[in-house]
Image 1 (cartoon, rainbow, N blue to C red):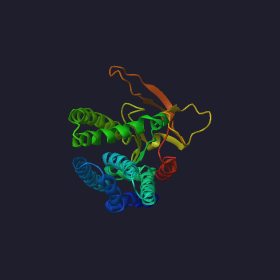
Image 2: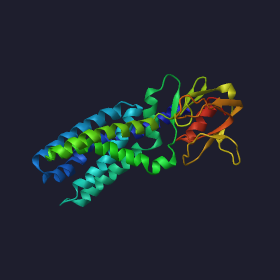
Image 3: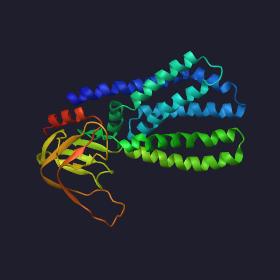
Image 4: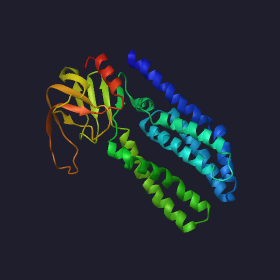
Length: 295
């Protein structure tokens, strides 16, 4: 089937990420070792142990495809680029640093791509179902998402490094506060990897906590059309302000949706005969809809 061939192509990109990460001790290792050479012994030992632990965790995580491990991979590889730039700050061969950092940055871009995301979120798919990530709101990508990523990584590593530098009071405070902030940041990033459009044998499911309170199943016979959004359409916008190509899903008759609300007692519902959605792979989405006779 076409989607199987597409998934195999996606897995090739996922293996690019895995292979480069597995090779980092041989490519980035010498650069990082040079950067740590002039630091204090305790700080150097702590950083070295931490780097090896991080490398092992991410390597295992990259092999265990799951939305949670997708977050780990997408945090670790950009962080490796930052670490390489830091390591090359003093007396480094900047040609070597730039080459390794540039390749790692390219692999980070691959890790952040839709095909790699597709592989990881489908690690928890059941049977003949396919999950497609929904694009995050543009406003989140412009600020909160990078900030959450920085807080998660920084909160994890700052405390132990300060303690290794014998800044005891600051180290304890940062370890406690940073650890708590890292948990919050990781959970918020993980929540974005659990926003899906899921093709199932019965039809298609909208699983998006930002748009609806509970997952909504649209059975095959209820779907009238599936394609690019039409100009002037009065469809209900469920994209949350995502950028890029928007798709319009139309129904044979209006359906009832319950938007998320902060007040649990509220039972606000809306009727919609069509909705706008923003899957990360609109072309693949339309292809799957046609193959499953949903368009």
